Image 1 (cartoon, rainbow, N blue to C red):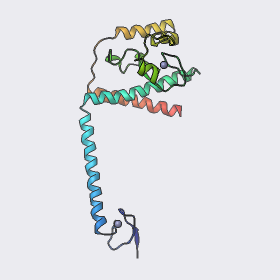
Image 2 (cartoon, protein in one colour):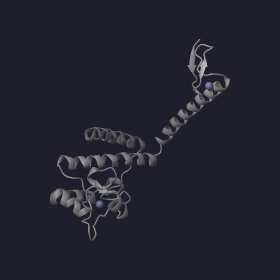
Image 3 (tube, helix red, strand yellow):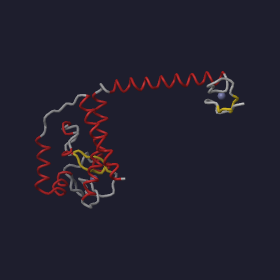
Image 4 (cartoon, helix red, strand yellow):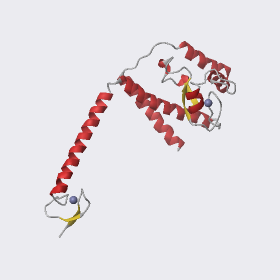
Length: 197
Ligand SMILES: [Zn+2]
Ligand SMILES: [Zn+2]
């Protein structure tokens, strides 16, 4: 006599037929339903991916997430390589919940949204969110612009600021370009995550 565990209810049952997976008719029906649902989910997922691959707004968004993640990792590496503690470009504080802060905002110069020259480590809550990037600074903080000059020096910092001011051309990416770019960013993310761990 051979015993098996039912795929559905997990009870033990006596095997009567070759390749029997379930204990009886009720569980056999349930197993069929599970397979049907799995196929259905697979097909839904395939259709959704196919649909999304033609949705530019969606692709822009997905690419943004990976780019921003890459920039945070690249920036942390920049500090690590110099034995410095990572700090916010605008308020210069360490130990913050950091994000990728755009010097020229995505709303004002969307063409620089995936541009390294335009993006540096920034504290998420204060400078990025509540101060909209904290570009010009305020009473207690230097601000993004001064941060660039202090961190990179007058020459390089000045060059960065000029570059962002000059590049105002409108840029559009099609879905294929966005997907390709995202693949490149994701590869760097993987490498930097491996390096940091
Ligand atoms: Zn069963
Ligand atoms: Zn800050």
